[in-house]
Image 1 (tube, rainbow, N blue to C red):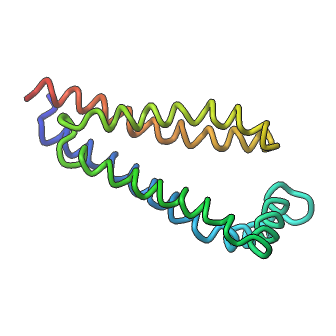
Image 2: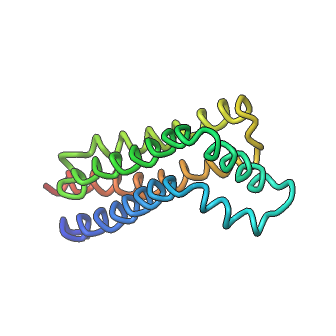
Length: 154
């Protein structure tokens, strides 16, 4: 039989992993040109990565204020990560945050599959974007189910 402590510990481990990945994902949006420069050396020529790197580099050179959009993207990841402090402290009371996170993960799919073609994003890259929804949904679903179990024990 699972104890309250066991469930709480499992929730905190899964949720901490999710928050760490969310923070890392946000932080990596700040130095996007540098990261793409590193990646483009491995994917030279007409690869998607090389094309994106040239576009970001050119945009940053001529229109540096456009990078402000990815700064806000990074900031949003960090702010969303802060919201998950509530379920880390009390997952039963803050189960709505887990539901919010799961809904957000599911919403990645229509965004990627609708906006992707409009923005000329290759389909395989849209699938990579969708994988973030799947990878986020796994730990959040585990935490949600364990929070429901915890609620029954309380």
